[in-house]
Structure formats: C-alpha cells, structure tokens
Length: 279
Image (tube, rainbow, N blue to C red; front, side, top):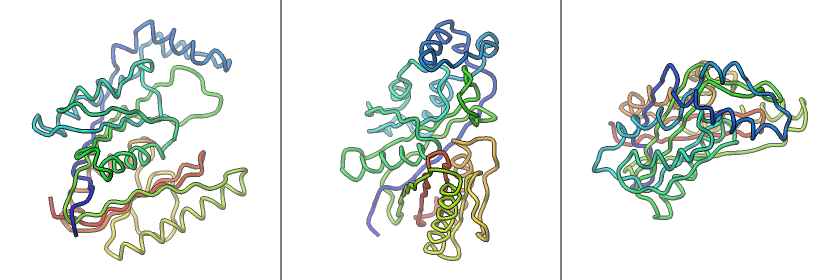
C-alpha cells in the first residue's frame, strides 16, 4: 500500500490546579460581555475563587514532547468544546509557536464532541492536497464554565490535552467519517441513535473480527465487543484512551475503530485505522 496520511503519534496529558489567568480581572469583563445579550448570569463564585486552566499552558509542553526541533509542523488545528479560561486570546496561534516550523494555525469549536473528528478531517485534507506534510491537531478541555448555561452542560472532571500528529505512513489507511441526522424530538433522536449504532456495527464488521473498537462514553452499541471509555472527559476521553491503547494495537497489527455520537447535534463520528507497521 502506498504512503498515505496516517496517525503517527497520539499523546495525552492531564493537569490539576489552575492557571493564574483564572484570576485575571479581564476574564470577568470578557465573559460578562459575551453573556450579557443572552441574559445569562456569571458564576461569581468561580471567578472569585480562580478556577480553570488556559489551553496554551495545558498543551504547549505536550506539543514540544510530540514534535522534536527537527520536525516542523505545517498546519496546527486546535479544537475544543468547553471554553478556554482565556477566551479572548488566539490560543491556536500561541500554540503554533510551541512547535518547530511556522504552521498555519486554525481553531475549531462549537461542534460538540464531533469537533475533534472535524479537526482531524481538516488536517487530513491539508495533507491530501499537498499543502501540509505534517499536520498537528490539539484537543483540549478544562473544567470551569464561568457563566450559568441556559441548559445543563457536561464539563470534564479534569483538565486534559491531547496531541495527534498526522504524517504519511506506509501501509496505513486512515479514514474519518461524519454523518448527521435530523434530531427534531425524542422519537427522531432515539431513531437516529439506533441508526448510529447500526452504522458502527457495520463499520466494525467491515474491519474484520480482530478489529479493536473504542466507543465514547455516551455511545451505546449493544452486542458489539468494544472498549468503552469511562464518562468524565466528554471531549478528550476517547482520544486519551486511544493514546493509551494504540501502541499495543498497532504492534498487534489490528485495525482500529473509534466512534462517538453527539446527541445534541445528531452527529455520528468515526475513525477507522487499518494496521500499519508496528511502532
């Protein structure tokens, strides 16, 4: 199989504590300006206590670990769902200075858990068009939301960052798919969730009996032999689990399937990775 865009490295890091930026008085001003048109109250307790983590601090060291000084990146895409503790800053641009090269820096948000897959799709598109030889995706989530949302929002238990490095890899086939369905009520939502589960089973069967299947915490696929990611890290948990298990699966030359379903958006996202050379 000829060389094609592949996933060469996946690294993850958790963090405790907070960034000093969580006590910056400008944070309160910025968040207040954002939520005022919607009549949403601030979390004055969190702002006073200083809670949250800046994504630049969370991911910069991990980027330096993922890429050496002689491994320049051409594109860096940052994706997140929960907002940064420094929401007014172009974090993707700051992170682009934490790796070699002068990568084009982009950010992607407001796509729920589907955002991680969308960022990876964009990175692979840059590679396939020849614009980028090495593309990097940075995923991040932190635990604090400094305003009260209009409806319940699931936040992570811990601050976490994940770095995915995409390069050409002989013998590997990496595919990312995203499918959306109409979610107009409970009946339609339930039907689409069932349809999503059937699609995951189909893709797993297509990969073969030895396929390793990794399912996000909120995705139910009855009857499928799969590793379930524990709840607690809605945006990064699936990818942290991949970072932990991929070296072993790759050494065994097993095809891999990742799947996540965002019920708010009605989006099923999958990644299939056919075995490349052992690491």
